[in-house]
Amino acid sequence: MIFFPSKVESLRSTLTIHELMQRFSSLVKSGIDSSDQRYLFQGSWTIDRFSIVQLLKIPNRYSPVIDGEIGAAESGLLIKIRFSLSPTTKQRLLIYTLVPLALTAFFILGFNAWLYGSITFSFAMVNYLLAREHFAAQTNKSRRALKRLFSAE
Image (tube, rainbow, N blue to C red; front, side, top):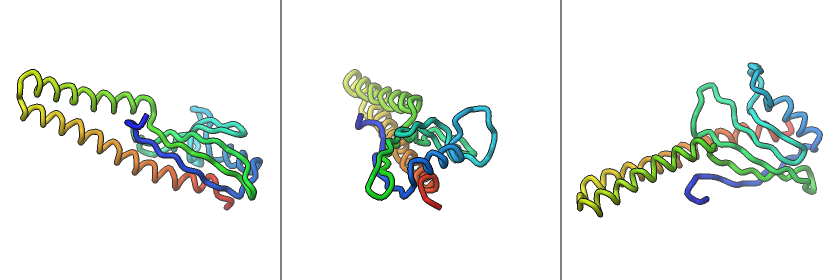
């Protein structure tokens, strides 16, 4: 859905599929009981798909869920990545945007109270724009960590 912020991109890696699976096992935590600091991400993966979230020292609601498909390319791997919000963050964004918009209609159409309507409309728009900007900032941080995961170094 276009309402929710997301980003799609493709990356190329010179790693082989075997090397990439080794990188996943060394940098992506698949369980929740390990407290080892060497992991960059938490999630699950198979030979052709993955779904991960970056591990952060300070949790952030706007940290994207990274879903990807791994395919073969001429000189390595082609990785299609989709950054999206977590389901709970999507629900909260929807509630905190649609409720003020409904209140806007209630104030303007029901009571002809343009001041209150404009205040609630402003709240909805500011909330939505801040969510998009926070998501973009966290996506950039996750993209930098992904480069470490997919690089051949």
